[in-house]
Length: 281
Image (tube, rainbow, N blue to C red; front, side, top):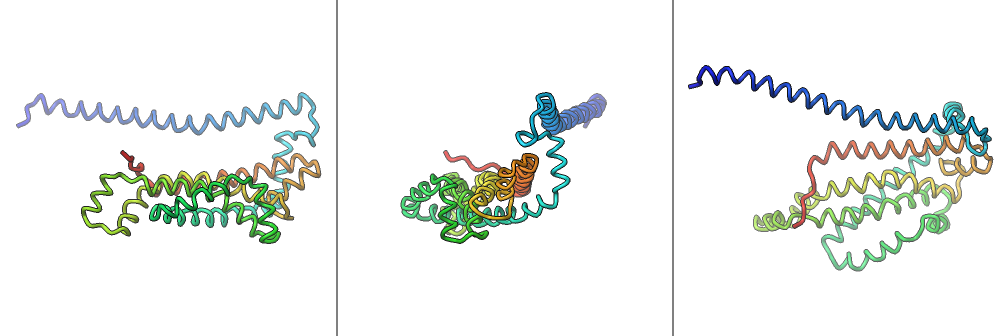
């Protein structure tokens, strides 16, 4: 039976807990806004410094444009920028899909057959060491001057990080959990889908976030070899014409798409992955 003194203590404890929770939430909100506002303030500071340097030293526009000139170009030539972003985005997205799906398939083969891994992994490493600017002309000769070699370059850049991370994720399962599933007579298929794939998702999304950025870089670099449209072609054209405001605007558009792609993958990761990978002991 509750005593009068204990009955009186409950509301006090409840109020204390509520106050502590409110203080925690307030502190959490302050930290969240701090993380958002500090990068914005730093970016504005750098833009102001950039504008001041250009104006103070009288730097000519074809050498380094001011942020105002770049912003004007972004607005004035927005249609041209978006028209050239479309093929680059398509090449990056298709390369991202093809490269990552191929890497996941090969990683699955590596995990199920160590002989395949020992035979082909050194070859994959060797191909990955070849610079992109050396691969691109070869692929143009093999595939022509259309979108195919650009997609292939984007896929090759995405392929290796995903292969390494996915192979590790599929292999790095907890030995005790693996042994338990075998004791319970789980089939290889059940072990793969319910244990290995589950454990590999954090590793996979780490690679996909890298691939989201590198696929765009690969598509742009591939467009330097020979094309008349795309962000890469626009960069080359602006460079030869000494149109530095257009050059900077094109770089900003390409980088913005890359950052957007990265955050989309990060959002999907937060929705799908709500656990940490199992540690291997």
